[in-house]
Length: 100
Image (tube, rainbow, N blue to C red):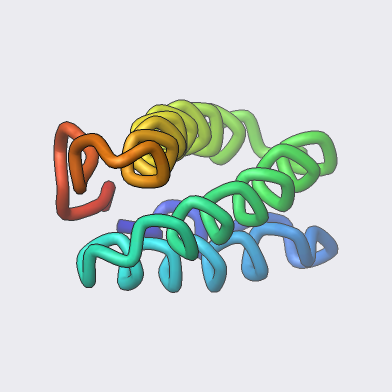
């Protein structure tokens, strides 16, 4: 899912770190470990947003914007699920399995 981002500007070290973190987030998400998945998505998003600021290639920037929106949506779902879990409600987010 990251092939279009792998060519991100070589001076931009934020994108590889973001990809590493979001890959871990997806793994935790798929394992139904929603709280650590949420935390990893949050950290990955910080790196993606920072990387977006330094990215020069417009095509890569557009791909980053789409991925940021996708991961932000998933992080919000997980945040709500974790909140419900802690209050004794539902045990999982709406769309379990993680974003790809």
